[in-house]
Length: 210
View 1: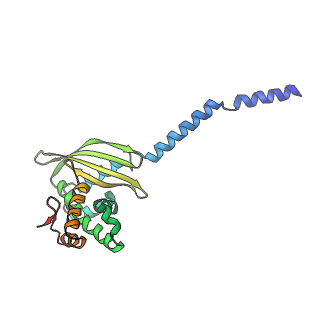
View 2 (view 1 turned 30 degrees about the horizontal axis):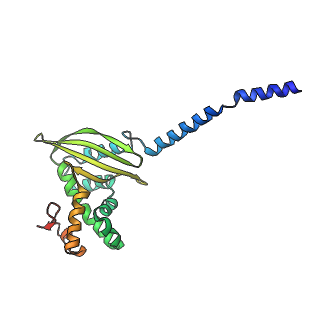
View 3 (view 1 turned 180 degrees about the horizontal axis):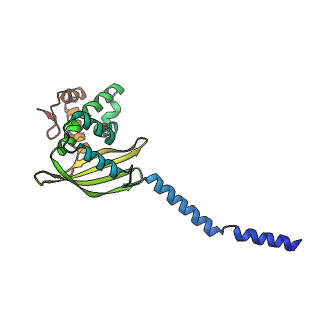
């Protein structure tokens, strides 16, 4: 009987994975989970594919309905608005936030899609994904041959990847508007800022109405 038990124990030891193998399996599992959480960088559904698809659809398009459709799938307008107002965002009511997002959406559309109307081709310059955040770079080549660097900064949320800031020729949209918006609010008032944005005469280069 002891011989039978001895043979059974030996058989179990042969099929039971050693501790080192178990530890290695745990490490592989952790790496796999991290990769899944990071999401595909350049594959379908990744940030690079999102940006490339949006630009290709918007290049040369002047139809407002189509550019609005592209923008809704590319930008996180609420996040961009919150970043532009920064500390002033928390002071706004739900109604004021909704109005500000709507007004900023128009400014963003003119700043972004205006650059794409004269683009002849797009040259990818790479992308980088770090967890829930990603950067996608490309160069826009205009019909005159001018090269314009364009960088998209994205964040992944429940709706997938969305752009929360972009930089044209090294100039950040959020950074530029945050500085100008705060200047108007501090020297005048938030209501004055909204009035200027409603007139569609806000100039981010100077922060004054035209």
